[in-house]
Amino acid sequence: MAEKQKLSRRRSVVVWTLIVLASVITLLMVMTFWLKRQVLDNDSWRKASTELVQNQDVRHAVSTLVVNQLYENVDVGQALSEKLPEQAKALGPTLAAVVREPATNAVEALLARPKIQQLFIEASSGAQQKLVNVLEDKTGYGISTGEGNVTIDLHALVVELGTTLGVSQERLDKLPAKAGVINLMSSDQLGAAQKGVKLVHVISGFFVILVLALYALAVYLARGRRRETLRNVGWAFIIVSVLTLALRRFVGNYVVDALTESTGERPVRAIWLIGSSILGQIGRAGILYGAITVVGAVLAGPTRAATAARRWLAPYLNERPALAWTVLGAAFALVVLWGPTHALHEWWGIVIFGGLLALGLAALRRETMKEFPPAHAADAPPAPVPG
Image (cartoon, rainbow, N blue to C red; front, side):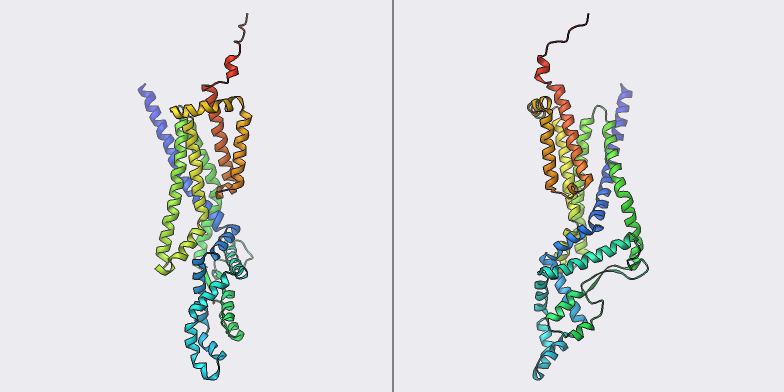
């Protein structure tokens, strides 16, 4: 007896070790998925850029940047003086100072127009694509780790503002090429970033297989306590997902505090929330998957409420299994079509979600068949005794 208890304790330690290890790797997997599906994916970046330019705080920040770039690279006062009558030319610098704030409002109004928003989206999307091309070490794109920087080019917006303020085309033609250009990554940072991106591509798919294998092994080794272990796996999913959401908020607060003054807090926070939206969706999806697992494990348990629920479901599960599977399949299809989380737009998210539902229904049906066998089986005449 003592030997059996010792063996059981050892197995319990192994099972919990597997669950904890799988949970840590799951957190790392979530980070790699976010990088791969949002930061490195041009469609996701383009969508985020659209949301950014439609955000009022971000538009105001971009407007201020564009106005500053124009005023730093063009003598707006002199340009306005050239437009004034001879007797009023001295008012040019004063007028330039007066119109600076209205100019910011004018750029905000420009950024509200679909045509100008498209300029911003194309600039942002093009910069991201160049960045990804460099990070994935693709050739033929004119940028490498030894040359130049990866930038987002808002030069066209600066020129558009200058035209609106009446700056002559001659002066606008003399604008430095770097006016309105924002540096995303300098050349001395690209080498390390390339190695990181290569690592993300290699390990992201491997993590999925490893996590599922570790959780499955934990459940397999927990003989006699597999239902409880499955419930614990569900709670592990929930805990990791809550940590993901908490990490998103913590990193966001750190970025805002480190990179901005109080006046720039709102746009940077908006940029972070939009840029990490998929991370939030993955976290919420993990809570959903974990909750489904926990509810399924509890429903299969010995409590009075769970037994009553199984008794109510038994006639449908045992005698009309086709109906039960059809209802589950229809519910699954509706949720996938709805796609409330990013994970349900990815093959791995759909497979995990469908697999959890199928395993849960199969396990529940096996339990109800054991506890509440079909009525016609109980009423059937006993089999004849041979001989």
